[in-house]
Length: 635
Image 1: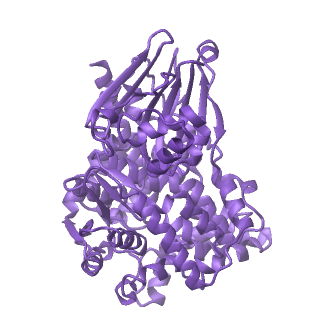
Image 2: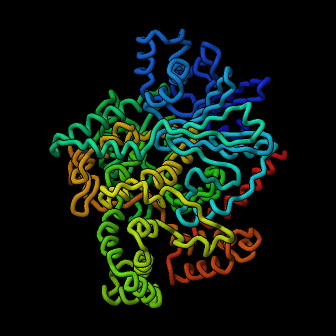
Image 3: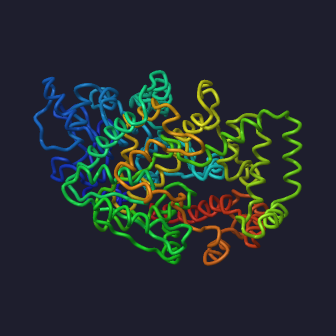
């Protein structure tokens, strides 16, 4: 099972057994802090009671170590790893308090030899994955599904309800998993399995929260920051600088991804300010101008004085990544920016073992354009009478996307953006919504009705459907930011970054997800983050203290590749092999006629169905790779 995760931890392979209890723990290590055998895992506490396996980092382990020593509860230290500090903290304080005291990212498991209790946990925001479940008489868990699939009891039956989630969002939200009887542990949770009872009843672990994003948001909003803009920027810089500084500790080479946007620039500026030598920065460039921010990143790197590396990728090189995606992502995953994320990770790994990124800035500080579009449209739409909304939606759909496209081309004399008809039909979905949250859900959906394409797929509820989780006192933009923080961020963004980095044995670290920065973001008045259709105001003000504003003022390009055009061109043969009627029908998961209609309309240019086709393509490719997993296990 650990051999299946070799790329996750290439430096060592450790195993520990409690044969009397029937429990085994395995760990592949990517050594970052304390490269000596003193940092090896599984690690046993000095008292002999606890055994720990731990994938991640405790950034404030030195402070926690000092506190243990001050209390007189520190063991005789064997080394200086954060794993040893965490284990000593668990022995002294208990798991819940130890995790609350930590500034960290992780997935971990602790076996209590005395009580025969297994506890496992994930970090506050979901940076690291952990899968678990019963397979026959065996309870299994791990950081990757490939490890679970290596077990002889593995069944691996597809969960169609999870497939419906993939069709809607492009990812499968925790606690759901693509496989039946397997779950993903949700962020901020501890799962406890009482082994004696579990062996008899095959019960699932009991879940408890040591951290709740919802509670954090509610508490932060009850104690808003009363500061002027300048004071707030100074405090924000202090917090972010400290978060970055903690994440710069490593006994291996370290660098950062620099896209040229505000978030990554803020992180790199804080790094360079605290570094005695030029920070290593990495950027991917594309030949298509609309997708290329590399020249801006290079200019920013020159201004900040970093040691910058850039790689311009041809369409052919980017497309060569696609066959690797099913192996890289344990579950089918359909955010096409997974391609450049893997490429920049692969390039960075040639030079460093740890890379910081600017992810989560959009969710915490209001950076997505959909926030502004939704906040203007949805309140007005949901305020209209039901009959008017549904009648208007029906009329828009009847006209069809192609006719709307021709109308807009005529109105703009051919200079407007193409396929605006798709956006008009998205408006029809919004008109059909009964609430603002339902409207937002439509806006972020690939398939608004997954049952149209997934055979037998009953879509389960997720955090996006939880209207009660949203405070009525929240501004609608804040409601959208909260929904993204608990759904899109862990399900899409963090999944994309973790799998891409760990797939090349690179550790990614995200300073914006320091819980102190997140709490500050939610204590900050919305006017310090969003105003007049512009977002991330405080991040932009911070960056402009280090980089000239003229260097930053430009439209946001995003981190994407032109999948729409590639599907009609160089990727057409590959896509056709996965989407043809025989391939779809033989799988039995999708409606072959529905898929064929979408594929033909996309090829003809009649519609841009990239968002709907990519999840299906990723599942089809992943499903074919699944056969290799099973063959490897049998071998």
